[in-house]
Amino acid sequence: MRTDLSIKEDVLDELEWQPSIDETQIGVIVNDGIVTLTGTVDSYAKKREAEKAAKSVFGVKAVAEDIVVKYATTSHKSDTEIAEAAVSALKWNISVPENKIDVKVEDGWIYLTGEVMWAFQKNAAKKAVQNLTSVKYVVNNITLKNNIDTSDIKDKIKKAFERSADIDAKDITVKADGHTVKLTGKVHSLKEKDEARNTAYYAPGVWTVDNELEVVY
Image (cartoon, rainbow, N blue to C red; front, side, top):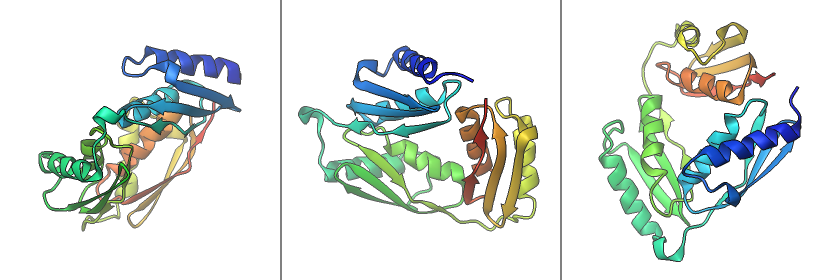
């Protein structure tokens, strides 16, 4: 088993390796394999990249992300300007169905609501707005709604796991109840756990994924 000190050193090295992140702005605390990230960055994109970098390190069981986004006064946009930019970004994204997403902005936080058919459309909506100037956080409350037959969701997800080079399918159990999928079992990294959740979400008819996979090393 890896020590917290060795995990911390690798997380710091991974942050330094990322060209978009100033690692001197990020604080790293590791306790029993759980990484807490602190500090202040000047964009939501950097906040996301720091979290992604920490999750990629072997031995990390979970990431608690307490990084604050603080924009320089010269680049700060009002909530109205952010909302206008978000609406425009969604309009021009071909993966997002037109007139299906509602946008609300409060203190730099974007709240997305509405109803789409597929998980990739929900994810595309978030990606379209999360890197806009002055955005602090994106809350994606878009719901999924389709008439897909859910009887074979479980088999489709298991086959997708078996096709993936990043997922060890043999230790993962998939349970499906209507449009809700529950994942249990063991994986070997936090990245693999996230990949399993994302893969399950892409299955037609899946609205919710309860990811209870345990990370073991």
